[in-house]
Figure 1 (cartoon, helix red, strand yellow):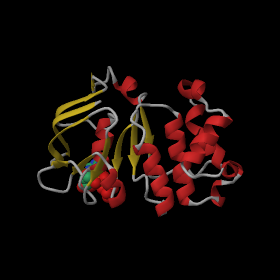
Figure 2 (cartoon, protein in one colour):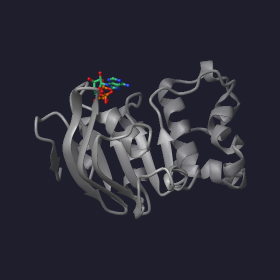
Figure 3 (cartoon, protein in one colour):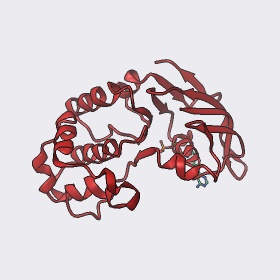
Figure 4 (cartoon, helix red, strand yellow):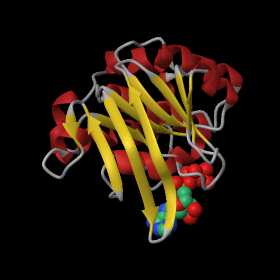
Length: 214
Ligand SMILES: Nc1ncnc2c1ncn2[C@@H]1O[C@H](COP(=O)(O)OP(=O)(O)OP(=O)(O)O)[C@@H](O)[C@H]1O
């Protein structure tokens, strides 16, 4: 699904990712870890084509990361940011926000799809009528994650997906996402539980980047 070879990314003279190489197979659950400032966000932004590398090769879904393919590549990625859009009114708006874009309209989920994913992620459907100010950070995080899953894209890029979750919610999320062989997941995480369940761990902290099996 993803091949990264000898990737070098920096800002002016500061090299953030130095000669990083890894491969991600279909269905892999990859945790990218490392100290603050080690380049986790930079790596995901580079893979989505928002930062141009200094050198190296990136292939996603068999296509080189190049302007000719960037729309195709992005249309296969669902992105869960850490900061959720709180200017929306209620939880349903947060869930259906991605489906307001023309390219996703046909995928707008029906109530049965919503009930099913809410059940899997440990969410009550009556949350959908609540204002975003009335629901917890962990509920918002799981609603945004439900939205990513409902987009039915093969690649999920998740920024600290468990940061607001209690242990029970976290384990529901882990068993749902990690038990789905169709989903290939790249996540930025400091969460040892999440990292332990991942099939591949990329540690950006060491001076030489290490790719470990957990
Ligand atoms: N747009 C930018 N311009 C210049 N330097 C940047 C830019 N974005 C990130 N950096 C620098 O690149 C380095 C890596 O930042 P990055 O945000 O990727 O780290 P991170 O591992 O995601 O950190 P955190 O865990 O704190 O979110 C930092 O030193 C940061 O200051």
